[in-house]
Length: 225
Length: 412
Image 1: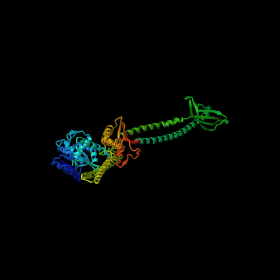
Image 2 (image 1 turned 135 degrees about the horizontal axis):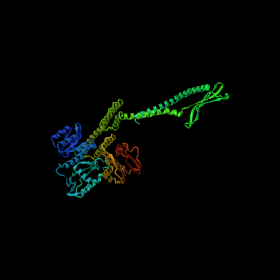
Image 3 (image 1 turned 120 degrees about the vertical axis):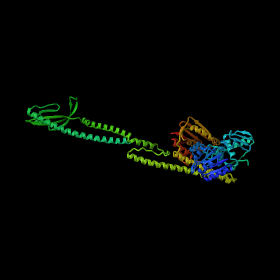
């Protein structure tokens, strides 16, 4: 999977790129509108991460350009503006998703995967992790080929875990992912325990392993190592 | 009161006073002239009577104007004037007369002569003077009214148009004020000044707005970098102590970012930057949000009672409506007790969200202020934002405590 990151803040660009490279994506970086246009005219990308406030141009114009040339890439806007108007504008122009800064890498990965799934780049809608299979089309989950019934929150949580496997996730990050955008959670993150325990129990009921490790009671890691 | 009406009123008051003085002066002068004319007339008559008696010896008597009679010396009367009322047979009412009495000696015989002259009644005189003046006053009034309405249609029309424009003017609107030229020096000077002022205001407002927004956005980028790096640190094998510190730092960075967003939202609401409004059903929105909050409610074992007796429809920006309901609901959950209750009463004119919680009333004055917080976990901005959203949409928000804490939003 090839990703173009358009972001004028070099530190941010490098941090995102390093992370995505480790996640087995091929990353290219563009730190300006002009650079992005150059890259887009030469290469094809599967996903473009786009900051809309660039020093030499508006990211929204880049979206128009991408749509004008019918480039097949999925588009995720990374914006410091938490404004509904910008979000609507961006999505209207054809962006697939809108992520507000500051974001977490696990969340970014999860959004990229969702865009890829929607665009069916993988050719398959099945995500596998050992004995667990998730069909992202029908939202069915099977453990050892036996279906389990998950609630929407449990399903979202499992998918988030698998996509961010082997990665330490804080309970806040998980809660924020499960939660709809605007809700002020303050410090009420503990409610995810219920979902977490239900998920563990349901996987175990079909003789699945407990891959959810708790780290010092503050973070979680979905891993088989 | 309109400018022209005010001027007209001043004119009329001055004119009325002036006319009253004129009338009074006219009355006095006229009375004086009439009296002296009357005396001259009386003397002429007296002279004629004396001549008549001298030549023919006939005593002329025409009641009530002339009365003459022979008298003894003992009954002589001195020369005098007096005013008296006499019955007037023709008109059947008492009329005022000036009576002149004199005793003359003609050929050794005393004669008493009384000459009376009908006096013009005082009120008749007054009327004779006041009526034309009153007529004049009414005439002036009508003319000034006509002139005013004509001026209103011509000279003041442009002024009115400009005034309406200024009343509609909003800083948020980027269009400059376009005032009509009127060719009246004072008005054009005023227009020029207003144009300059609004241009300056608009540019100041714009730069302030941009500064707030830019500052706020610029803060988000370094926060992103901090957050990404901390998240990457978390992936290494860290001892518990360090792990905990990283998590605490991550959460603080997130709080800082959320605080920044809240402040930006607050200033955007205060600057009236949310213009797009549509009619929204807050009852529906409340129920949808309540569903989203379910996990939090379940976790704290909070029960919710909803009394829905109508749809609360408000012209409100969609994003702000969501923030409003979110903040009120999360407030009711955050400050609740476990196994507590939330009571929601929503009808066509408002919504009321009550929650169990601390048994004491919160300070009504400060509760909607910024950074008023009950515990260190909140930023103290939630209710300040709620208040500003209400103010921006002409809604009223009240807090009350009767065993439960209640927040009520209603149409003013």
